[in-house]
Length: 298
Image (cartoon, rainbow, N blue to C red; front, side):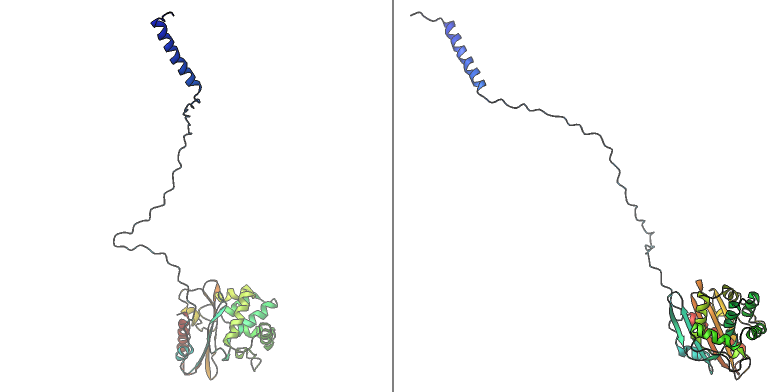
């Protein structure tokens, strides 16, 4: 047997190792190649968040202001009672009614059932009758704003006399109003405070605007020289007003009446009827009526 050279033996040995290595690599599952994918996010400018306005710090020593709800306007005449008004007309009589047109409520009702002679308040019904039949507007306004008795007498005769009163009693549903016992004495028409309120409600809602314009233009002195700003005008204190006043000179007692509307948009209808002993002069009686209205206004 021939000897194998050393080089040949070494070659065989190395070949065997290579064969083993190749066999091993074919029998192993391929390993995944890790791939890193670069993701590029588009650049977005962030929207700034609105910051709340800082609450102002109160000045040192000064408390922070608090928001308060507006105080409701008190009702006219709230808290006025009959005894307080009776005391003003010592020895006489008083009736007072206040109607709030905004709330639709009567806020004062003192002796509402008492009857009085109307004096010049009946001129409101005379004016309605004249204007309803197309009478002279300017003369009607003069009769009201200056309380002109001569014009009232002329209209009374020309437009129906006592039937003027009965017509409006039916139309307005007046319950305490009636014509004078003597048909020629229009100032003796009988009235009550609630009925006068109804007359004003009709004037404000349905009556000719010429009448209210005349009441807004009432002069300080009537056509007979009597000062007719007692009551509502003297006590109004800057409030807007429109009035028809009444006073009588002849009889066992003196009548002084103040009636009209008061406040923005003619909010209140105010009627105060008074009767005074003849021993009380007109200046004193006028002041008493003003004092009564002042109590109603608070």
